[in-house]
Image (cartoon, rainbow, N blue to C red; front, side, top):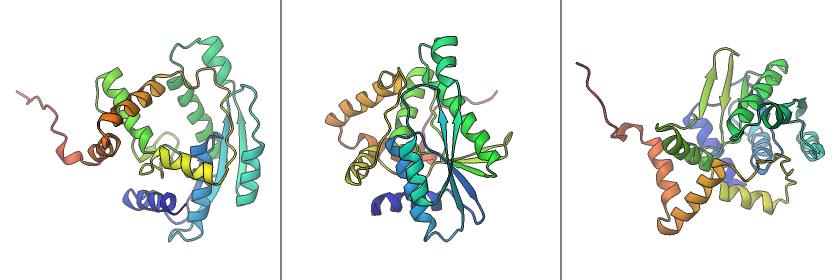
Length: 240
């Protein structure tokens, strides 16, 4: 857990993620990443130089089986207010829209539900559990599928909602998250999503695993590239 807290603290410091008086809603899907983020922030709250409050929000996709009992138990253990937001995301994405690539729409709707609940709970920030591998995968998906160099930002201000989204796990590798959650036997809720494991992101993850057999530092170097904004070396077309 020491490395988890170290990475979290460095991200919070580097990007000024947390201020005194913040009330932060943690988006908890039930997976390993978000449960560990909630636990890590609860521990960090005890020694952080900034004094802040935590609560947790789960957007229920309307798909079953999905038992939130483990999340509720974790929140009770950590003394964190918890709310489940019922949605019809599953019906909208898979029945009404019949999306071939449902992840983007699903993520947008889920984030909207979590953000709205956060505002209702008087939060000014939302913490999401995107980690270093998520940032790399998003970068490659943007390159391969959209033809642009882009990934999510560590801190994003949503002006329409007057809400700031923070990602305290951006320096933490997914492999280490798996190791920690296994060590502490954290209960992980299996996603009922029909597309789980069969997405473009899953393909990119497999590609990175393959590349890592040839280039062991590929993930590390891609993260380094994201931080090295002064040396992008991209083409610039001069104006007339």
